[in-house]
Image 1 (cartoon, helix red, strand yellow):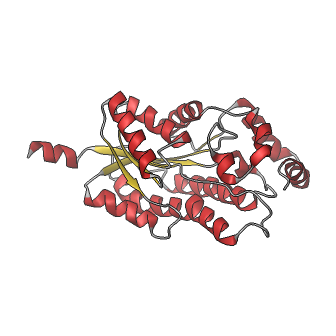
Image 2 (cartoon, rainbow, N blue to C red):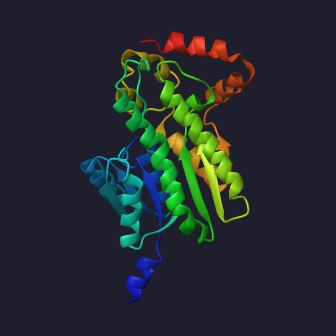
Image 3 (cartoon, rainbow, N blue to C red):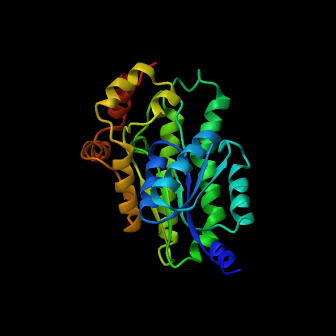
Length: 266
């Protein structure tokens, strides 16, 4: 009976896209601090491998739920899973996301809409569904992963950049709304990171240039979690990325778009 009550009141950090990349690095670092984890992603075998590895290394509870987050009802299914298992959430990490490279007109609309579902709609729904329970915690945290792409329009990555701008604006707005509550909202805007993003987006050879500036997932995760616990609103990891973000505020938008188009050209 006592064990059952302890399980019911145990807090978990829920991480979408938690089986690899930045999400996996965040999961590992949270586990190293003694946090129990709920991992959500598409690939069941990758989730199982990551969960088993973290359990062995850090001796924490790790549960996982395999689902395609581009499905319209994905957020509701994730929330239902946590409710049915009495998982109390004190940290929500919206890390899942992907890009689609190519001319807006030429790339299949269905693929682009799936990207928007993952990058924006599912993220928004998860925030809305979990906020009541997060507000009931002495300390609750939402960590949203955006991108330096949020700072300017990117031809051939048009909807990806737009979706990340949405995440940043949305995060800042709800952080202000929640300023007098126990919940902090932090948005991280990383630049190129050593993940499978480029392959998934279809960037191909264009990724060679970005790799010169790649940060490692563990490095980004450490910066993100430090900012989250300090309840910072917006953080851009890496000196080069900070310079780039500043440049977007002082340079002409048309110039930035032309420069980006010359780099990310089909």
